[in-house]
Length: 195
Length: 282
Image 1 (tube, rainbow over the protein chains, first blue to last red):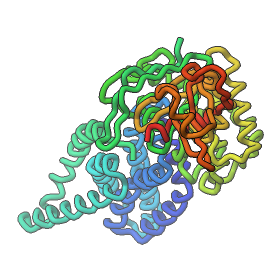
Image 2: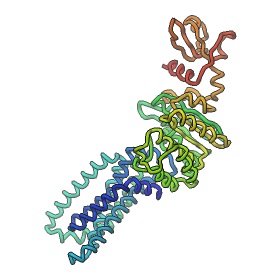
Image 3: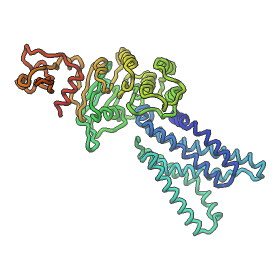
Image 4: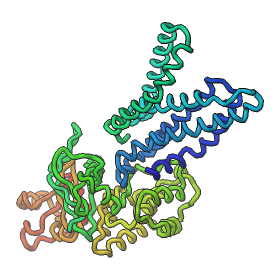
């Protein structure tokens, strides 16, 4: 699996520099949304790697090599976790550096929540992308984000204040992320099809 | 031991199906897999490498059942070159080498480097800027740098210029000097296969029409050139295929053992045998 992740890192390497620059700029601007967005956005990098794989039909070649199906599928999850984790870390470092000026401490809770949301997003979308390919999978991802936004706004309307639901959501997030991963990985293994 | 054994393989895709495919490639030999586009060559290779599950039948490679978990280890001993399936385009030859070092336990970086130099492949150029010939050369370099015992090559010589093609064929031929080394190669360049192979297997519309020793095939068949009346006077079993040759003449692929003694026959080639058989089948 290490070789597969190494391959994806090589594939994404040129874009990583652009990503780093955007992360630095957005965290410098600050704001809850910016930090949250960066982490979830970076977790989507496996789809860029998958798009390159599809274009070169790498999946067909990989099926001939001594990789297991499990390695191929799991490597995409690990890559997503790594990207989201590194992005969250950079955000934290930037927030700490900015705290000298802003006098507000780095928001560990926000970054942990962002990372867990990124894990959830990966859990929902990776099985779709591995089954239907990047193009159709992205469409599925958009629909899921749209549905989540509707559910969120309905929840807010019924509860009134975001602070009222923030605590329970934060407490539930780690369990939700673990549970979703436990369901998502075997599902992705079942759905994986060489595109 | 046989390097490859396919027994009664069936695989249906709706409009196309591999039907009752039986194919054996003895260890230490080179088998050419011939067929038109869509005849089932790539499907056969995917079944052999456990990338596709057949509807029925069994497949074993280097003594291991391809559906068994142990086959993953056997893949260490198989070098594969595929037509139209490459490494992601932003990778360089050096990066491909590093990824393969983590993929194959017996990866030989020195050998890979030697191949890159021998094939004149740039180390730092991205794969997307490679010509088709360069891509094939890189794939061949990878397939031959992890001490494989079996090479499975799907159109591996297409896109190569005649000089490099000749060099690559020489390489493949040297590879089988080791008695446990074998090759299954599919190609549309029949002259390459005639030069290289010990066995020729011919797939037509998902069916294996024959799999015979090349020399036996060339001895078995001959070309008869004569008039239509002369060809029609031959026993139907003796004629495998025929075509008009102009000026009212007919050329026919015939079985040497089935025609009357004394009839003059031209020597045939693998290309002739395949072409006549396809026309005969149509």
